[in-house]
Image 1 (cartoon, rainbow, N blue to C red):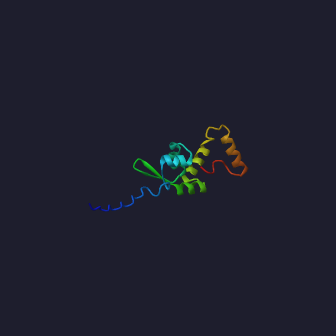
Image 2 (image 1 turned 120 degrees about the vertical axis):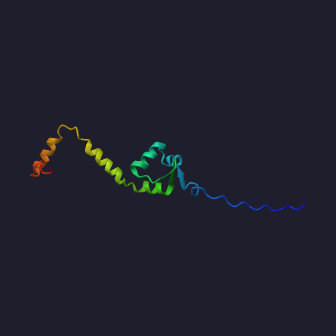
Image 3 (image 1 turned 90 degrees about the vertical axis):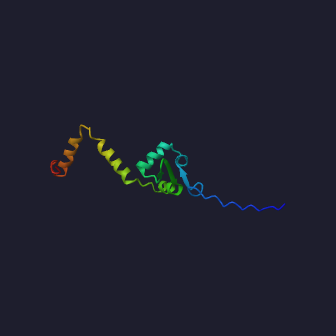
Length: 114
């Protein structure tokens, strides 16, 4: 009886990059030590680099590391921070008096900007 040599199977293709390089939402959350919902919020509000493919999220580990390293807030996050700060004093009963004092000290009328 002759034996036939079986052909070696081709290596399986790497899916989503090398293991550990491309992370799922759960893996990214574990890597960042945050709940998954918090990671989604950080993607929206602080520009954590990610891609949504259908219902799934994918994160490049190197991009997360760069994001952590730079720590630069996004324009969106920066704008939201300024808007929150600006609205912080909207109900302050002394705000109008403080603004009028500031204008007066600069020798300007409080109605100049209107």
